[in-house]
Length: 306
Image 1 (spheres, rainbow, N blue to C red):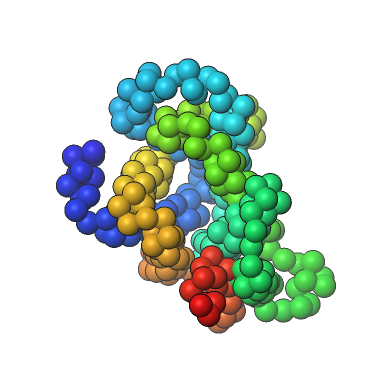
Image 2 (spheres, rainbow, N blue to C red):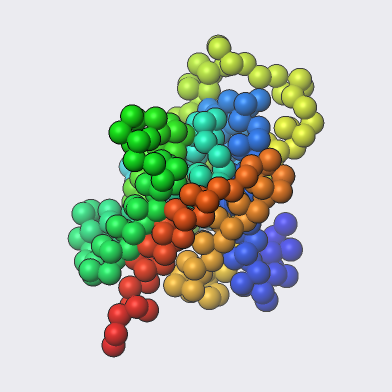
């Protein structure tokens, strides 16, 4: 695996495309199997597989920085709580109720909420255009989750899955702000693996409780479902992380961040082609507003006159 990624280092933009493609498949595949593998058990299974696959890449780094990791156990705890246990499990819960297209659209607002939370917790300053971008994106979210109908909002018939995805986005934004604040003090790969372990430990009691009313048998699962769980544990979890980090190191975070918009594209393409979903006019309109707001809010310097 590392050999392949090493070979692909000559093509950093291709690595960024691979990363976003695999992240896009997470929405589609989890939507397809969440009825057979309940969310807490799916999340635990995914991260157990990911931790086993990722360990060979990082065990030397853990040994070298063990003292630093121990010293920063509190930030690591909250990173595992938000980034591994919180975000992913909320996403899988949401996929029981909403479409992967809607989920990916709402998820696309994450960069703006990272900016907004950075103002409150990191004392970063943002310009007027960023506030405008946030407002435009929230309008897009409103269109997506209400289907463009005010009656839906008034009668509180909003799809609960869309609301849960919105909650997952907030949790991811908190994780990202924590990583901004404390990530400079810890090794990146080792941190990712340790947070996997922390997340699994946190989720395990909930997964065991979930099994009391919704048990699954690994041997009884269809082979397609088993392969999907293995896929989620390897590609959107480990391979995307390695591809994304290598791509960002080569082209820089500014250029790389624009590739995140591909997640919505890949999710929609796969959901329509393989997931049996259909794209609606309100999703298109909401998506245009949402992505426009994200682009403006995430890149204010591009739109300001110099």
